[in-house]
Image (cartoon, rainbow, N blue to C red; front, side, top):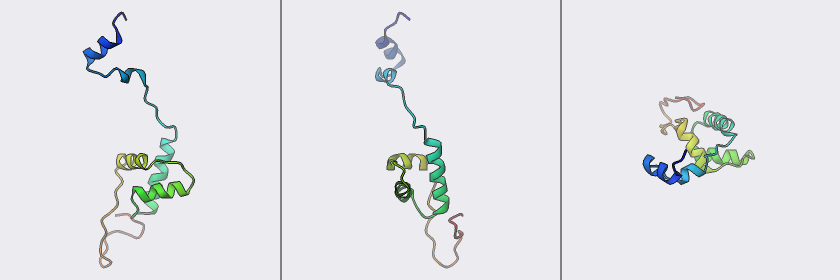
Length: 95
């Protein structure tokens, strides 16, 4: 069109840098999500930091913040610690 980028962005209320840099997504996001969910099921009391350490020990190069973002997106949580008597959760970590 015959309208400048500056004018279009000003009318839309959008920053100009959003027009130049396209967001890029990692291609292994689905596989990493599956691995995180599998580790969270296997180790029910481990949080995202320890799951990150397990992934790094397995040879994956992952960022802690990325694992935390996936952890929150999948709504994974560590159950509250309960006394040894009258446990409500099972040994496999499920509720």
